[in-house]
Length: 134
Image 1 (tube, one colour):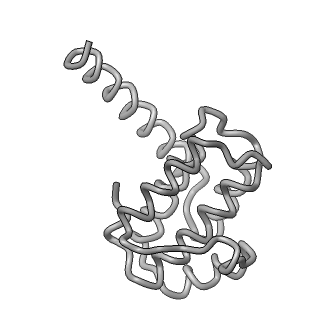
Image 2 (image 1 turned 60 degrees about the vertical axis):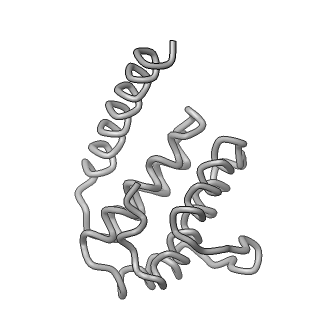
């Protein structure tokens, strides 16, 4: 939703984190793959997951050096959305995003606020679809 706010360098580092997050629970689900494809479309880039393999620490350090607070919020929000996409936001994914929030200097509640806002958004989207499509 907000990925267009990222700069060129941040776009690739975001995809690095998205790939790392989608793999952290050992279940790169079809839903996560679809979200990742939509991210690439929104970002207007191509991305080779295996060729860009980096550690989370390396990517986070690069983002900390190159992002402002707003860009960091976009990254966390979009990663929470990815983690929720398969309806299995598990403890490994929560720990990954929690570590990211801590590294970015965000309160632990920021991740919860993103999750709550996304749940409300998805519920509203379901209600609209039911109203219009069914």
